Every structure is written in C-alpha cells, then in structure tokens.
Image (cartoon, rainbow, N blue to C red):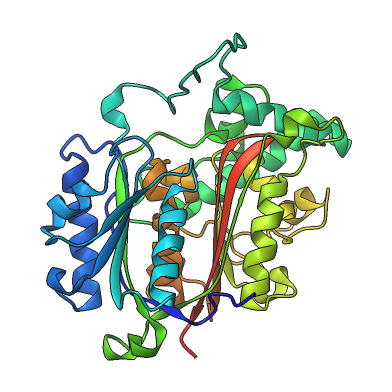
Length: 391
C-alpha cells in the first residue's frame, strides 16, 4: 500500500480563541480561523482550489465555508465522523492533494455548541423500536474507568489520583495556551474533591463544552517551499471505525479501544514508526475524559498495557517528560467543539514543529501526533495523524 508520507504539506494554519463565544456565530469563527490560515500561508482566498468543512451539527453543508471566506464556485465538501470529524476532513483533503487533483486547498473545522443550551453533547435517539435509555458520554467513559481499575487491580483511591494527575497536567499546560478556554491551574486536592459527575469521574475529569474553529492550508510537498521554509509534512494518516463489536462480542474487555490501535497501526506504518514512545516528540490526544487519556497512552503504544499509571506517576507525559502529551491543555482546557477539535490539535503540532509554541515549546520537536476518538465504548471512530518538520 502506497501511503501519504511526505506527499502533502501544511503551509498555513489558523485557530480561534476557544470558549463561550457569545460574540460570534459559526460564520464568524470560520472567518477568524480561515483568514489567519490564509495569511499564515501567504496566499489569497482566490488561490484556493477546493475546500473541506468538518462540522458535527452546526452546519450540514459545505456552503458556510464558501460564504464565510468568499470562495468563488469551488468544490467544498462537508465531513462528519463523530469526534474524528475534523481530522477526517483533513484526511480527505490530504488525499485529494496527494492524488494530484488540486495544488492548494483549505480544510476547516467548526462547531458552535454553547448556543444550544445543552450542557454536553446532544445524544439523539435513533429511529426504530430501541427502548434502551440514552447513555451520555460521562456515563459511558465512567464504565471504562471502573472496568480499567478492576482489570488491573488498581485501588479506587490510587486510580483517582492517577486521573487527577492527568487533569492537573493538562490544566497547567492550558495556562500557557492563549487560545484555550480554561487557563487556570488546579491542584490534585481540587480534582479529588470536585463534584462527582459519573463515578469515578468528577468535574475536573471531564472536558468542557466550547465554541471554536481551526483551519489549515494544504499543498503538495514538492511545491511547499514556494510558500515558506518551515512547512510541516504529513507523515501518516490512520482512520478506523468500529462496527458495534463491543456489544456483539462476549470477550470485549472495555479496557482498550481497538479502533485506536488500528488507526495508530496504519499511521505508524505510513510514517515508518517502529517505537512510538521513543520516536514521537509530542502528542495531542483526545482527552474527553481523564480515563480516556490514560487508556490512549496504552492504545497508542506510549505505555505497556496496565502500566500507564506508572508512567503518569513518573511524569512521562508532562512538558518536561519523555513524551509530552496535550502540550496545549487538550480538550480539558479547550473544550470540545466537535468539528474543530481535530484541526485545533493539528494547529498545536504545527506550531510545536515550527518552534513557535512559546512557553509550552517542546525542545527539538521533530515528529508530532494527533489523535481523536468519538462514539461510545464498543463502536468508535478513531483517527491518528503523524506530522514531521521539514528535513
């Protein structure tokens, strides 16, 4: 299989401030992120030949991207794939460029969630005769937490402290991210004493609900040098979608997510990565809940099975650690505007690999990874993308 490695480059990116953006609608957010990306790339809107828009529920067509950026009669595709929406839109744009169909394209992700008045993600009931109660995301991942503690014989108090350390790490990193929603440190004691949302997940174990947008300008790698010297190369892209196996198989363990593993395998294969813990310099992963980040460490090969708690205790994933994870604060500090999150993660890796991440800069960052996971335990959409600095 001929992969994507070094065929596509990012030459510009933009990202809005994430948060309760009562001052802006979805179009405003697209303008904010899109114009920053266009300016960063040193191009004009008329140079863009095609576009992809990732949106979970705010927009149902690609037209808002054209309207926001005044794009003239170019093809624009709207992509939706649960929490992997933004990265999947990026993936589709990369394949179109790699295929030689277009030279310069834009991909944007956006979501305006706060206006809905819902304090979390809406969970629509599918049509049919299903009478099972709806299970919101905190409850779904709480079940993964209790199972993980049980499987690896981790006492509740120890498990909660491990999760608290993840929250503390991400909140600290968020204080160094000007575009993050939450920019305040928390202590382990605060996390442990916070109100319970879904046992064992408390308030600080759950990401917030935010508005935001991010955008990228993509081109062929062989012409990227015509736009800038510090372009970023796409090294590998993996996407895996579950088929409800978790509810159909009696041996499903609920302490790892197979979609993560499969998506990572594909991305690592394309990027020629054999030892992700040693070769990847930083990662921005889908920490919708602290237990999710803990399991992701193992699914992506950063920690051995059942040993992620030890790595957390040793500071492996802090800014100063062996493999910094969620250097910008992650979903924990940006919230999770579904369509925007994946591209916002790419924005962080883009800045890190360029050496432009300011106080949160990882030293000598050359290879970065982003990851998304959406759905429910047993049937997820997972995406993994690997990026490298120009040689």
